[in-house]
Length: 462
Image (cartoon, rainbow, N blue to C red; front, side, top):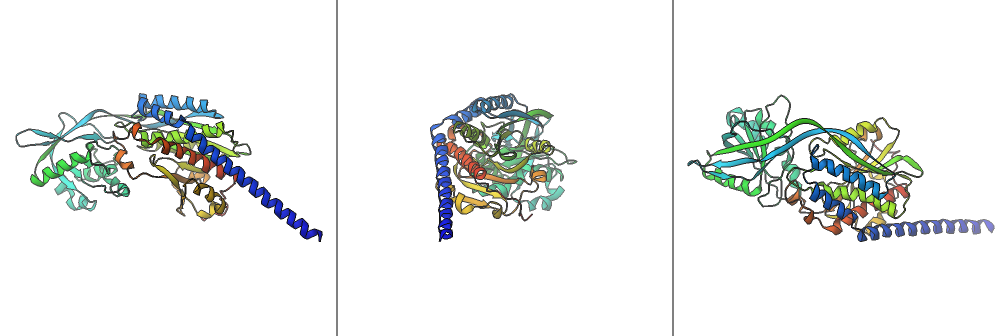
């Protein structure tokens, strides 16, 4: 008779322990959200980055000031360690806005509002004047060939209708110049990749291929692109004038900023958060990605203020040169090759400051154990959209050595591409509540991953 009683007692004890742990977890999660709701810290960081250091391209005064500022903020937040990671990045700047215009038969010109694409070269002399060829699908390029493109300015006229169209047309901005230059084109105009109809052009990088002549490449605002499209319908042989004023100094020295809270039990296992600090020359970079930077460093503040002692190391890194060549993350990973630490997971925050709705994780779902428990905690705070791709980012930095799982904080923001890479990306357009909620979501997710020992990589499929 004693054995069944003992079993019942053990069973009740186990239930009690689980209940106590659940209550403790719920209490801490509530404390995290209460803390972020009351704190202006992330909002103040974003305000500084946006107002005082806009246009944070590598090597600029603004980027250097932002690096120093974040280093001090992380120290003030109480991070156990704060340091800089040297990065050699591609220097580039636009010294003056480009001049682009429709040339009329009476020598009058209709200005087209434009911005130079990153890494764009300068035109020489008084610029170029040439007829225009419109391309609205990739297959046209080879069909036109040299006979249709030589000596022409190419107008890539892809129109984004919804957010997901970005991937459909991004090739025209990044690869388009080299794709048409090999057939003799002498300049490129790209309709801005945006869902907003206004006169603000949206920047981005142009990636020139080696051994193909570099040609000037600019993005037109949506309104300017419409003006050119309408003018070409009336006069297909019209000429366009284009001048660019850019500087390509080669590699420049810059830095990633790293801050961490050391783990109490497994200090060599790293739960990693990253967001890029650089932003384009024509924008404050509030949504892209000053907000993400503000959110990831706020996790350090939250853990320290609430005296949460993680078992694993929580590391955050605002990094440089994501927009052009991702040198900041690549070179950090190269350094990590030689240490004895393991990056378990990296959550990247770079999808704008909308309402946080969950996490997109590039791994097998089975790697994340105890889902029936921890997902209930996230559900209570509307972080219900947890998606597993089933595939790993085996070409991403940190994967080669540590098999690091890559994930993203996802948010509901249908207007993200209204701001993206443009003068619309202002501090005032960021919803403070969304900013705070995103920081809380990151802190909660990492708290749960750490305390519940959720990630089990031992049986991964690939």
